[in-house]
Amino acid sequence: MASNKAATATPRKPQTPTGPPFGQRADAMALADTLAQRHALPVQWARKQLSQAREISSLPKLVLPPPVGVPKNWAAYHDRFVEPRRIEAGRAFWENHRSALARAESQFGVPAAMIVGVIGVETYYGRHMGNYRVIDALTTLGLNFPAAHPRAAERQKFFQDELGHLLVQMRKSPKMTFSGSYAGAMGWPQFMPSSWARFAVDFDGDGRIDLINSPIDAIGSVARYFQAFGWKTGMPTHYEVNLDSPDLQKEVLLAPDILPSFSAARFQELGAQLGPEAQTHPGLLALVELQNGEQPASYVAGTENFYVVTRYNWSSYYAMAVIKLGEAIKAARP
Picture 1 (cartoon, helix red, strand yellow):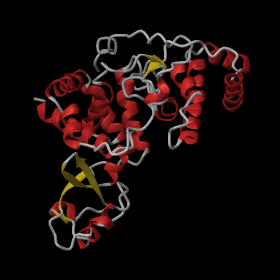
Picture 2: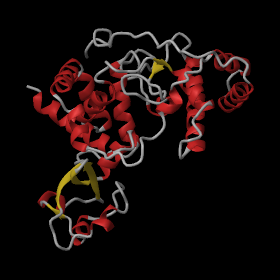
Picture 3: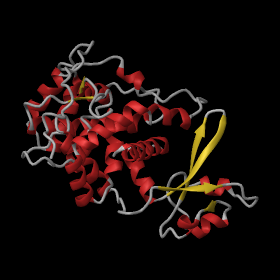
Picture 4: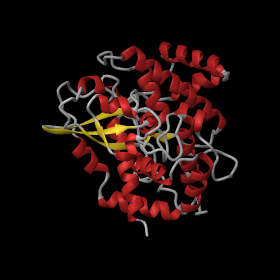
């Protein structure tokens, strides 16, 4: 097993917030009381944490969706992540942690290439883990979420719930610095606090779970996450598909979005032509559309395992980037 300390990314100091502390703001104290009751935390301790959290005024605009009409571009998205430097970094990561990756693959049934692909897309192997204090980010988004967002109430509740899970982790590990992305995702695998609570594992055996400083804990936790969402060992994530049939019923095939909904036989009845291996696929398939800006879209037949990858980040573009990066790194290994 590779040394945990030798492979840990360079520590980063959390970004200094620009705004004032929330202090005794009535809404902050009310939220602290609610979260303390929900998670069986000391009320005064929870109040202190939120009162000391600092408002980051730039965050609300960062969570707004992109303007309507901005075309997605799979080719550009692919080239952003599946590029030589990231592939080389992933090859080195795999070599440094080959024992832990093999153990995770054996224990959870998730291929090492998928685990390496996730960590590479999420944080460039620990280089980009985020430098916001997560207590600041989640308190800001939990109290000051932008009303202009089309799902403002739902998303604000999400960040408040995540803040509660963060408080639990802070109480368990008072000496740990919880830093991460502006949305509160933490560590090598960019787990939100609720995912840390539900899926993170102590994979390096040191008696504690630390996704920020232990890449080995991250490896086991990513594999556990996939397993929990139904990863099927040995099943491909997707197949090539040909849409040149005159009988193609694309609208019917795209209606369920990326949720696998069609047997292989039904898939072909609707005009999507599959290769020999895909024709015998035992589960359900989805027609996954990847737009390429002004150019024709790309398509694949996604399996249940493709859908599992999208549970990590609800985007087919993200899922394909993870898959393609993992494949490229595997091919680059000796």
